[in-house]
Length: 274
Image (cartoon, rainbow, N blue to C red; front, top):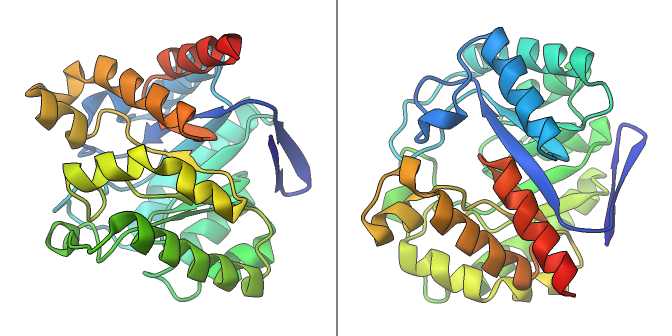
């Protein structure tokens, strides 16, 4: 299906992958993703790995709309030690760092991360692409307009699918020039997008396969689900599984999730259907 080369270690994917979310934050929108201390971090990571997570994604700040934005020093404090601990416990499990700071990316990779997940697609730190290119790790390039603090005001498009695709085409060339070989594309569900935009992107997700790059789907428990259904994030697992299934049918290669077991089961059932 596709391969990723992280620091000389090849990850071969013959089926869609599951990326488990670990947030070293007190304010992420879904409380179940927050890991307050090292003991909880290890417990949650162990649960995800046992349930079939292929990758663990560690983040140090909430990217929900209007969340307080941290500087790189505080983000470093939150994520680097966590990555060191996880890498020591599970040296063969690929770890991703969720950051838009190039310095955090560099220090996280030195600590054991083998992938960089950047919600800004390199737009918030001009050094990010060059840094990732020098680190020789895969790069998750997400589409977002503005910042988490301003993105709700930026959700204006003539054609959201075309505009996101155009963004990816431009950034793929920028990544190539920076020496980044493995690029994963994330349409950025919920980032400067309304529910209508999100459903349109999901409906036309297969369009992004023309890039030849793996597609990451990040819809887990998001407001498009719980506001549409009139429920809370804690009640949004069933809706998440429905959108995961639609995304997989439309070409998603990686599911970024809070609930590994359910995501993996959706993948296995669809694989059995083929």
